[in-house]
Length: 108
Image (cartoon, rainbow, N blue to C red; front, side):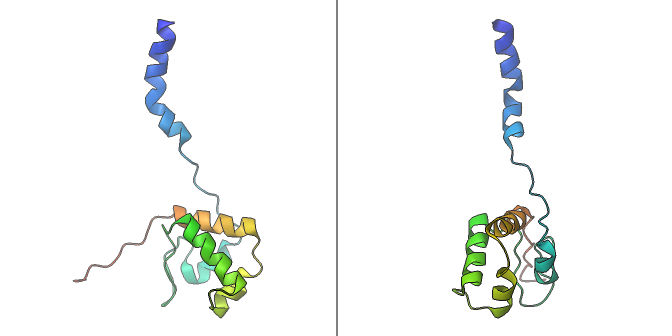
């Protein structure tokens, strides 16, 4: 019994590591988004927002709002139209897991 307790105490610090979520898989629809937002969520064209590190729920809600027309951005409405719910979830998960973009300093 004492040995089992000692083993459990030894493995306790690893419990958090084992429970860490796996990084998301690259969504098949990522190419559609990457043209403007970059595969890593760092925008590639002027005016496109950076998506890297944004909250999952925010990204998912935005995709829904583009698709249903609540957010009136024609290019995003067209891009989100063919996406299924699982596609949108995968894309939101992907971009939320990416490292946020470094914000430029005022003196740069």
